[in-house]
Image (cartoon, rainbow, N blue to C red):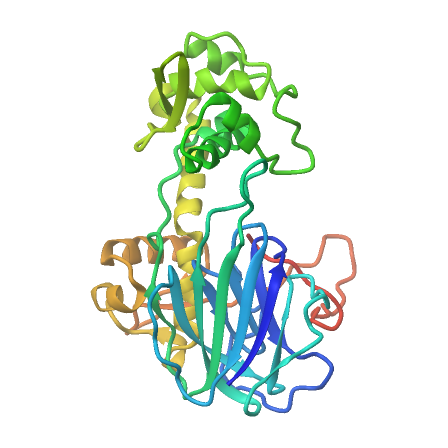
Length: 386
């Protein structure tokens, strides 16, 4: 067994990436379609991880991670203690893989993981999650990711452990109403709660801007006076002012003891349109965003299952797929519906679903169409549909 370990991996766009080594031409090709990194318009990494011909992508949070790549001659024992586990085929064109990034960074490629030979492998991707980094508190050691490769015949992916449901929880619509500051404050409450007491001081200490355009804890926020008036509150001017608004909206609850107020995330928050008087077009937009948030990652799992299945189509029923996917038949049917509506999946004759290739890019009106050159790991990254 060979192991490559990276203790300080920082993903781009919340995605951990492994690819074939790019200093040599592939010597093994595959006749299976839709295995290129950009052949599908589905979300790149699915709920846990996806792989194809010369690439693997895993869905991670932003922050520091520890990553292990392992080469085995036979299937390693399936051990416990991992929060998320998926097995998938991987086609190695060069016989060696490297840990890299979405934009093909060479920070981690000093030592490639040598596989037995070019050809078809199976890889078990496992993740053990740890609490996220919280400024002002004990530093997180980062999630641990393990990717075990071994030679294997073609077998469709299967999901062995999930730390959360395949279909994400419903979106309440508050992000669209309250904007980024509202989500940042809610996340700060979640982080502070992990320390034991989400007082306003601890929430302020746990606060993390989500983008370079976000301000500090006491910086001004956009005008929310209209929503605040509906809730009977003055217009919030800063992030601390959002705390009473989030309580009035039903997203947070409070308890006060010995003169200290502590905040808690509501276990079952109401939808925004149930609390606020919103225009019909905004309600429709919220519901479309909810559908996309709930099903995008799982639809990518279904597409991955299809491209690695015989004939590129899945014939098993949703009830039969519930075990291999670790999902309910209802969620599988609902996600197939979403995938068909979004053009990610199709329903061919005598099959439950199949993956649809990414449609060709249409030339701009008034410009001469030129052949589209695919960007690979040697020349850059083409971008993904997140």
